[in-house]
Structures are given as C-alpha cells and as structure tokens.
Length: 448
Image: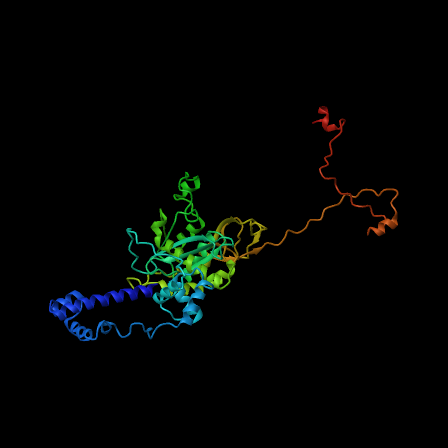
C-alpha cells in the first residue's frame, strides 16, 4: 500500500512538471519562473526541457520501477516477519532490532525493520504517546551524587507465574543502574543487597532518593517514646540505620513523579527484561539474580549517558567499616553470665576475648548478615558467633513402684526388663494430689 501511494505521488509530480514545461516551451513562463514553481534550479529546468522533447516518458526517472540495490531480499524479509510474530512476539521494534543482531546475526536498521513489519502486517506492540509538557528537574552534574532506589512488583517471569519484586537503583546523573536484585517482595534485604553491590562496584553515593516506605522511615505520626525523647532522636529502621552508619543522606519523595527517573526505568525493564527472561527460559528468582548482572551491563551500555562533570562523586568506604557489617540486620543483645546471647532457635555462644575480659553483662550488637552468618560487635571488636552447646543433663532420683504380685519373670524378659526390677511408674498427666480432710494442713489449730 505504501509503495502504491508513492507511485501515485510520483505520477502526479510528473504530470505537474509536464504542464509547467509546456508553458515554458510556449513562452508564457520564463526559466526563472518555472524554477520557482517547480522548486528546482534554472539549470535543472533546462535539462528537463531537453528531456521533455521526447514526450512524457522523458520526464520519468530512469530508476523508476527498479528495485533498489540495497533492498533486503524477500526471503530474509519473510524470516524477520516470522521471528517477530513467533519467537520475539510482543517485543518493541527498537529492542527487536538489537535482539536480531545479538541472537540471530541479522543487522537490520530500526527504521528498515519498522517498514518490513508494516508490510508484513505486524502491528507494533507499543505506540508512541504524544509528549506532555512537564517541568523536569535537571540531572545531578556528577555521577554518585544521588542514587534513586525503588522496588517494582511485577510478573517478571510471565503472566501465568507469581509476582516477584525487583529492587534496584539508578544513578541520577548518568542513568546507570549500579545494582539490583530480585526478591519475593519489597524488603530491607533487597535494599541492603542493592546498596552493597553499588558500594562494591563504585563506592558510596552522596544521598539516596526513595519513596516514604516504612522500610526507610519509622512512623512519623506517632508520639516519640521515652527512650527516643531521652536520646533526642527518633528510632531508625534497619535501612535507615545502615544509611546513617555509612553517612549516606536520605531524601523521601512525596509522589512517584518526583522520582521519575527510576519510574521510567521500570517502564523500560518491564518491557525488555521480561522479554529476555522469557527467551532464556528463566522462571525462578535464583536464576534471575544470576542473569541480572549480565543484562544490566548491556542495559547500561545502551542507555547510560555521560555526566556533565566527568569527575565521579562516589565516596570510598570509611576506615573500620565494611559493607558486610553495615548493610545487614542489627539487633541489640545483652550477654548472659555464661557468655551467650539469646536468638530464635537457641542461644549463641561468644568466643573468648583476646584481652582476657569477660563478655558477661555487656550490651552487644548482633549482626545477621546477608550470607546468613551471625557476628557480634562491641567496643571495636567484631567476631563471628555460633550455636551455644546444649545444657548438661541433670541426673535425678526416680520413683519406682512395687511390681504387681502376678508379674511373670519371663514376660519381663520379653519386655526387655531385668527380672525383679520394678517398672518405672509414669506420673499421670494432669493428676493433682490433694490432701485429705483430716490432714494437719486443714486444721487451723495445727498451724504454728
């Protein structure tokens, strides 16, 4: 249809030129006037007059009707249409051009791909929306000054599989995604993992920009507790405490549009990442976390932009701190006299201190790290801990009942008992022995 329209337009242009040139030959138009009407130069009008002497066919371009020398052959066009409708169904045109080059070895420009799919009646999966006017905030001038973080709950592994949450961050200056992880839901462990990946690959950001989720800030509407009043500050969440320990500022957005850069990132990833997870047949969170770094490396090479100031603003780790000890869960515990601390599932034993001092009675911080290990930190020390040994069993005297008179020794041997040994009498469950009415305890006169 598009080729037919172009042919009709070319025929109309040829008739218009022949009409103008007839007036030039008749002398009613000059060469300059004809050039202005046709939008051509005077020299080109002279050429057309010479060719017009051969009739209307002389005005037709010599290449009309001939296929272009760089036209993609029909067999390849059919293959591209088939791939777009089967293997890569639902992929937008820009992403499809990249996937065809990476996975199929077909280097086709995006504009050419759009024409091929339009001729093959393959409709685009996404239409371009008209731009809306909005006031946008300028990017930060240096990479590492501001990191926008968020979690996206989506059916990443297909519409028929459960939801999962991708927690990730994006640098405000460059649009680079320094880290991310898949989780069953948006939680503190996901943000710890993202921040630890960012710190390990680049450094510490100057500030973190997020929504006002309870993961970042405690309830601000409630009255402060007595402990908070005495300390002079509100209690921090686990993520808030980690940001405070790493000297990372926190900015809470009051609307999704305020952190539009990370919201647009989800729009891109829910299109491209879902497609590539499907092509790799990935349906679990564990496999997706293995594939995610490879995808983010290609994503950053495709979409990241250079910062206005080439000097990065990532900060190195302060001395005496590590990402494993900061980006983890902290719990305050008091050490018992036997050098143990309480923990669900059993106590934890602290190792002997190198300075010979005792742990008993001290308040320590128990760290539950992302790899599942448990550490204790106090007074500049940080040591691993393990389960405490079980308490030693206590031997107590048993109450033995007299054997019944008709007990057969052979039956005792069959039961595995030593002949003549009275069996152990198990106490009746719930039985309570009450004193009789004539017991001295019930006689008031018997009391002293």
